[in-house]
Length: 90
Image (cartoon, rainbow, N blue to C red; front, side):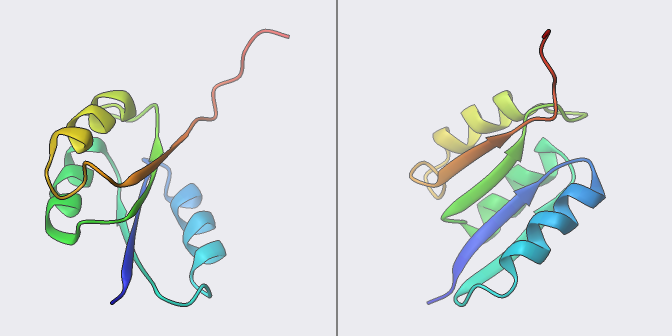
């Protein structure tokens, strides 16, 4: 059975980078979303086992999306990897 991976980022380049990295890995079915609202819709339908989730996105940010994914029966056990390009003070 294919294992679904959901890649969520408002930056198309980042989604493509992650997808290109994973597309040769056997057994993964790759799905994409450009914001948190779309991610919830795709996740409900596809029930991914792994979610790469950007923190800063329009409409619904990654933190709120993560909380909702944890509340949905089909994704409550999914592994969620939070991504951010935010830079701290150095």
